[in-house]
Image 1 (cartoon, rainbow over the protein chains, first blue to last red):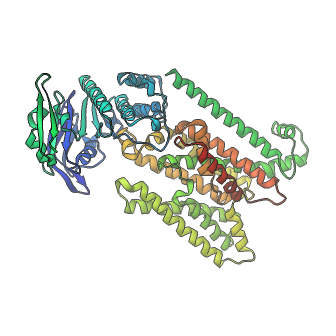
Image 2: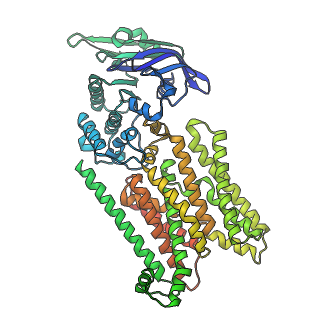
Image 3: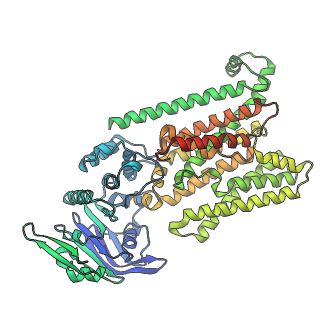
Length: 256
Length: 337
């Protein structure tokens, strides 16, 4: 088992934001975390990444409690893809991606041939070889998202945690990023992402964690548990879930 | 990816050229001055060959310590500035951000006021430089938590800096206006003229140690420049790295200020210039800042002591030369720092 969360309460300074979380994640799964703004999705992420101590309960990564992992070893198993950001210095995309090799490098972080090869493979996998020499600060938001995903890939982790990977992307880039995420899942990676699109729950075989309020959540296959009532409960908006019979795909539309 | 290797080669070449620039500016700084020493005499003297005693005297007793001191201090301030800019994710940070320069300035003023000897003044200065940063660190850990620790460090640095600045003013007010006050004022303006061969020997070991630490931390500094939490998820022990950077930058800055007073702008401008030449990757940026910083201070100091009839305080010129230069950098480069 890749990740197991037992009776987890997470929050800041001992004050829980999210309570009684229980779920398990295995290799090769896609997970969407749905919930309104401020419900504690980021708090949960920080706890899963070991950036925040749990208030109570336990997080097991590969059956070993999170607090027993060293930062370097944990980085080989879990990686984090933040929302695309602009760093203060104009690093090249290649330089950003190769940073993901840090857990495998020696103390001074010399870039070895195998690191270069890992970056090349990731660039090819995501079809972004043309970005390698570009300034990370000057490419588009969608391209930055892809570069950050490439960095998580060279980190070699089996659990990838993505913070709203499509939040600022246009329609095309949105679809592209999701299709690459599915590619990664088909390769055996487990991808966990937060999202504000209920539609992501309908991606084939997608699992969802629905955070309704502080202490109530639901876990299951997206098509089973994301219903019109459920979306209404979460966001307080009337909506309709439509089914495209031909492709057996569902979609959720808000009724304005 | 061959292009990556080509780029690495280019960067190595640039660093080599910067090394060459340093060599040339060192030789010229040894040659130029009130008493001109021909370059071939310098080379002969270093090769151990016969040169007039007068030249040996000026070269090894007067000029060499000063040139080596300038080199060490220029390099120290630039390296400290470059690594702080990475750690604080801000290209506008300079090495005195945590209060070490103000603390060292206060220590020196106190030493002068209490009529300590030259060694005493330098030691109290160094010690107060360290104390200032310790107070800043204490403020940030006492009142900060997690996310805002960097912000509190900067805030703490501002508090501590202004505390020591006002204490400097207090000492100036209390100092005897006929001899002590001018001494303090002149000291604070910054000059390499006070450097002795002993100072240089004393500084070389910590300087080299800090240099090695910073160069070895360069790849982690790259990651830290993206943000603390992100760096943690990539396996970087950020607390340890921050402590290491603060420790080395403080030693370097306090040492520099205690030996030669306040020398502004070097630690801010040089990393920018270095970034324009070799790019933002700290693996190249730290050595490049080091080499450029050494050359810059040497050139400015040589100008200070030879262009005018009276020696101009170094700190004045580094700021005066640094400002327009900085403006020029701003206009020239819009694509990131």
